[in-house]
Length: 586
Image (cartoon, rainbow, N blue to C red; front, side):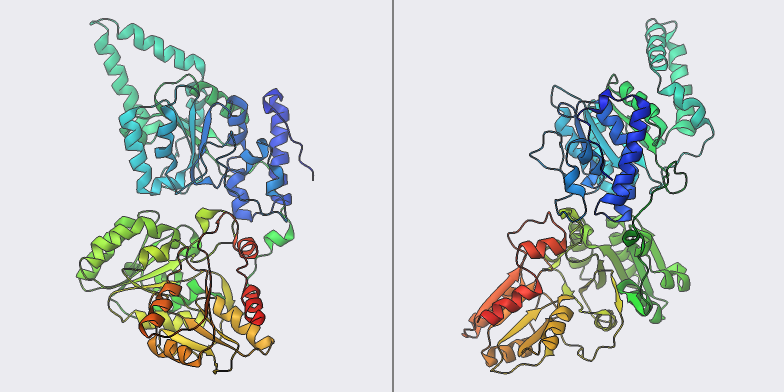
C-alpha cells in the first residue's frame, strides 16, 4: 500500500486523522522492514505521536523520544517514509541534521537529563516521550531528581506498556479523567486557590483542601512516585484516543513547571485495530532439533544440582529467563529489570556468604555496570561468572542495539570467552564455573542445531582447521564467525588454517607459537568489539619473540554503527568472503 504523506496534519479533521492513524498502522505492519516487536512498540505511540505533531510545531518545540526506538511514526510525519521501507538500510536513529529531531537517542531513561538542557531555551516547549520500562532504571530517578530541583516547564509523556510496577487499577480513573484534563477544571482550580489563599481567614481552608486533595490523588488517582518529586500528574489517558490526547497536550502548553501525562497503551489485549503482518514476519517457528544458547546455559546450570549455586538475572524480556533453573531452584533464582547495580551488590554479598553466583546481563548494560563490578568484585577479589547475552553486532539498524561496547570495559577485569557454537558454549560454561576470578561468557541468543564438539579440550584457543608451512594463510577469529569460516574452508577445499580464539583477551602461547613457526600470513577477524584488542596483543607477542609474520586485520574500528550487521559488514568489507578474497589475492 502507498501511504499518503501530509505536509501539515494540523489541517485534518479529527475523523480523518483517525483514519490516517489506521493507514500508518497498516503501513508499518505490511510495508516496513522491521520485526513485529519493533512495529508494535511504535504503534503503541502512534496516536501520541500524531497528537504531538497536531498540537505542537516541532520545528520550534522539541520532542525527545527516550531510547530512540519509538520514532517510526515521527519519521513518517517528517517526510522520511522511504527510510522505513523493505530493502532499505537507512538508520532507525534520528539525525542531528534534521530540524525536527531534537534528540538522537541514548540509553533508557537518559532523555530526562537531556531535556533539561532544552528547557533552558527561551522559546518553545520541551516534551519527553518515555516508556514506563524506564522506571526500572536508576538513571530515570536521577533525571527526576534534577527536574525536581530545577522545576523546568517540561512535559513528560509516560507510555504505559505495563512494563513496570506503575499501575492504575482504580475504577475512578475514567470518571475523573475528562474533568482533570479540561480547561474549565484547571481554571477553576486556579481561581479557588487565588480566592482562598488571598487572606488569613480563608487560607487555612485552602490548606485543608490541598491536604485532602493530595491524599485523594496519592491514594486513588496518581502514583505517589511523581508527587514525591514535585511533578504534577495528568491522566491516565487512553493511548488510542486522539481527542483525549489532543486535549491534554493543548492543556500542557499552558502549564508551568514539570508534569507527567500518563498514557495507557494496551495494544495486545485491547486493540481497536487488527494488524495484518506478512507471513515472513510471523513465521518465527524454531526448526526441529534447534535450541538456543540461553536454553543450553539453563540446562547446564540446572544440571549442576548445587544448592549453593545462585542465578541472578537482569531480564528485559521473557526470553531472558532461565525457566528450567527457576522451576527446580526457585529460592536460588533472583530476577530484576534494570536494577543492575543492586543485583551486583547482592551477588557480592551472596558470594561472601559462601554461594557460587552466576550473573546474567545484557551486553548493553555492561558500561553502566562496570563501576559496580569493580567496586564489589575486583577490589574484594571475589569470583563471579558473568553471562553476557545479545553480544556482538545486532541485526537492527540502531547503534544502541549493538552488543560491541562491553569488551573494552570488561577487558581489564575479567577473562572473556566467546564460544563458537552450542556445544562449545556448554563446555565453556561448565569449565569457568569452577574457576577463580571474574569470567565472562558472551553469546547471541539465537537458535541453531546442537552438534557435539570434538575441538574443545579445555584450552583457551583451539586449532579448528589444521595448517602447515605451505598453507595459504591462517585465520584467527572468535565466536560464531569460526563456524562460518570453517564451512567456507571445507566447502571450497581451501588450504587455510583456522584458529578459534575462545578466550578473547589473552594469548594461547602454544597455539600462537605453532602459527608463528609455520610462517604463514595471519588474518585476524574480530567483529565482536568496537575496539580490536586481539591484533595489538598478537603484534606485541611477535615483537617479544622478534618474529615477523604478515598480519592483516578485519575489525570494527573507525566505522559507523548506524546499520544492522548484514549491511554494516557489506559496506565496510567485513564479510567472511572479503577475508577469503584477500587471502586468494596473495
